[in-house]
Image 1 (spheres, one colour):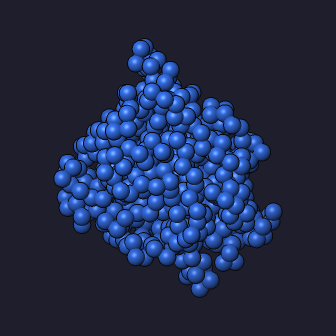
Image 2 (image 1 turned 135 degrees about the horizontal axis):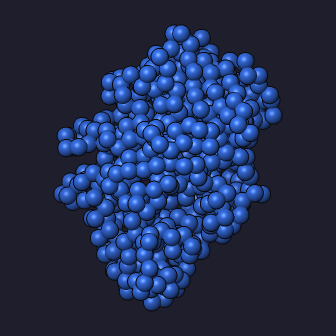
Image 3 (image 1 turned 60 degrees about the vertical axis):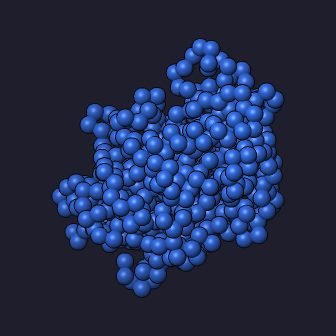
Length: 521
């Protein structure tokens, strides 16, 4: 791997997940040198373990955080509001692989929904038409099934139950994907072996991640240096307000400075916002790129919940892929249901230990015992939909809690919007009706888990006063500071976000490379 000097002016990328890993690869393809900083270790398939809790402790971001708000997560998991990865490849090494696109209306919810009390609605500064060619590039890179002639994954029993229920209640848009998990060998990755353990670390390597695709190719170009165990703590700037370096701390607590001609932040919505807030200066007293006061605001985590249904015969939902199919009928905007926006219904199989922990946190007794005793006969789905952006839902720096480097941890505040509650209640009922239609003898509504879909906090906006970034993900205030992860999302939409993060990263890298080559950055 090429060594890059700390005094070399290169593109510094913070975070190696969907956005950061993709940005590194796309820039090196264009001949642009970069340093890729990752806070966690460099784990590979050989390091992964097929055990839920051991894998969780091996990969998850377990650094302290604090929480507040009315969301139930703040009570059940106050130190774990988000379930993300601290390792090379980021949360692409811990995801189910779903790759739906945004719908057209989801990019312009202010125009579609009008005003909504308590919500900070805003149209994206880009259109679906602008994104479509990059969606195609992302789908081909990731190997999305059901797209571009790619074969689907085989249906497992959990999906069969879902599909039979969908047919019974009249749904039309259900399928075993799209997913970025290979049904057959593709792009150097093998086909899935359907072992039920590809959610947290995929030893087989059939599921797309930047760990297995983008990062090795970026390194092989000779233009990218990966630096694991490197926690970014500050972005500095010169007298003109241009970003000029990233300060990071290694695993031994030593500080380093890497000079930068441009900086791309891709540390997940919580940590990316935290990094900009930590980077305040006399020129940016509220935090870097925060003249609008919008850094950290409009945190979205998707409207989520799960339903697990019991049957009188075995389902064995854990066999095959963790997520094996979805229903898209409810994604369309239909305010007659009592709420704006829409949601997906996606199969989700949790192992026994995870189900025991998350099905009803803190519960015990007969009902809980009945759920666990029926594990083999259980089918499950996850509800994932658009949550409304709210300015008050935000990431700030904790006033009391500090991390291992004595820096303030992220404080995560989130309140459910009334629209979110109405959507969740409706979705719960529809899910239970679906399972009842195919003979469920009981079902349970599971509250939201710690979020893997962290969005907003540094949103794109047409006007600088409404957000942090322009339509290229470049900070309104800092001409060579870019954000390459889900924190750039203007609104959440209903779709699982990874495909769109990769899409935006490909588009942004093309723009950054062109600007650098013209000497305009």
